[in-house]
Length: 306
Image (cartoon, rainbow, N blue to C red):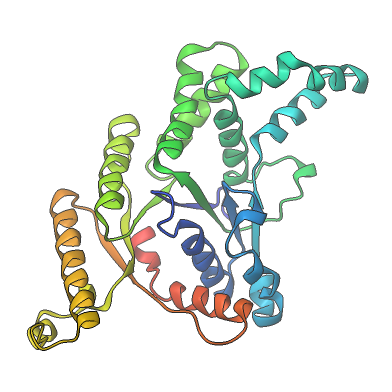
């Protein structure tokens, strides 16, 4: 096994499907025989795929043994650090329960983001504490928070390196080098073919390049309509004038999506990966969710994330 896991990051505007695509790729890799760790920035009970994961062992037994989903709580990381460095449990409890400590966690700029990245780097380099109980894996997939929080999280490492001294500054410098290294992260900027989401994708890519010299490996256009994906010859056969109201709306929306995608390709010369808008089946919710994850995985081209 390599010294460091392959790290793939799904980032972008909130609500564009990052969590679903993260788990879909994790399932695809696990079914291919790789051991995968999906790191969520959201508590697991908030993930829309929780029900699916509970049924995973029944549907894809071998993949279930290789796919792990964890949530990193930075506050728990800070508390763990306090408990580790205070020799007496009573002293550690006194510090953790103090109002000063609680206020520090709440207001200290970048503190929680810093400790989140500490654990992320440990996981990526396979040196997490034994008590974390993280199995060995080949790939780490980070379901990142929304754009602003994601960029501020990465900036936290840079800030600790620049403005502090001592062990925290050293850790910040190490993290900044790791998260800025071209080979450390494969970033997939996820968007949907909507004006606000694409505007935020521009901001994300500009921030990554300006602050870290990183360009995403791909831009994933998620939930794209059939009209947006249609070949020009097929579009020429559409008869908008003689179509019903619902069909006219679908065609017009699809054409607007095509225009947005074309404009994005011109503005950001980054390979695009299209994931169509897929519908759930008619079976039980947990089975339909797993079918959806399995179907989505077919459109996630790993060559663009290599």
